[in-house]
Image (cartoon, rainbow, N blue to C red; front, side):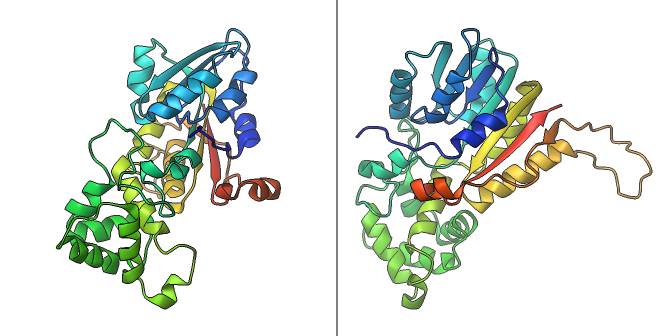
Amino acid sequence: MEFNHISVLLNECIEGLNIKTNGIYVDGTLGGAGHATEICRHLNSEGTLVGIDQDAIAIATAEARLAEAANRVLVIKNNFANVDAVLEELEIDKIDGMLLDLGVSSYQLDEAERGFSYMRDAKLDMRMNQDAKFSAFDVVNSYTEDELAVVIKNFGEEKWARRIAKFIVEARASSSIDTTYELVEIIKKAIPKAARLEGGHPAKRTFQAIRIEVNKEIDIIAPAIKEIVAHLNVGGRLAIITFHSLEDRIVKHTFRELENPCTCPSNFPICVCNKKSQVKVITKKPILPSEQELENNSRSKSAKLRIVEKI
């Protein structure tokens, strides 16, 4: 299958990055190179784009699509959480901007055998990095009932998490749960009929939660933001697109902490902790897709863009 993915909030990201034509920019979630291609168009021959992705198919696609870029393009198979190591290997100390588009790509959802989608039958997988050993199969078949309930509740914000976890454990007692459709049927049985009629597909939140757990998506956000900011030149910007409230909360709070790091009690007349602000938050409220974008790309519906600038 061709790697098809419509870049969300494309113009807003490019504008938000405030691109210098000879700068060094990093796309930490390269995907099909939609955002990266547009960044390259704003760079001259002295500019550099570093593209990072852990998906081998995304890497191959991006390399082909960026082959004729008029500037230096460096494509690396890795996770954006390892940005320190990536930049060190490339002998790059400071960058002028970085973009993160969090979550799963349209291609990964649409390619049935990747096991991301509750709408397509496949082996339980959900690995963004196909070289990783740990998959959705391991979460579903080896986590305790309590562990499953915590994952589904925290990462899926699913109010029926405890009941779903119970039904999963009961089902796997007779045989392992191997496929997406097997898991969907268990989730449907766990959620009462009246509740299944509300708020979209009944498996949506549980699949999201398991995907996040498999790829440790939440754990890496705050540490990665701090590493990225440390590498930004003054005036450099970090733009992050999120797709659900838990991601957005972490981004918002981490940005706020970097802007206002003082830990002194509020009744202190002056700051004595000596923690200095590292960034200025550009987006006091997140940027949302336009009505036109929502009409053209339904998967942009929950997208939010937040941006900070190094000071």
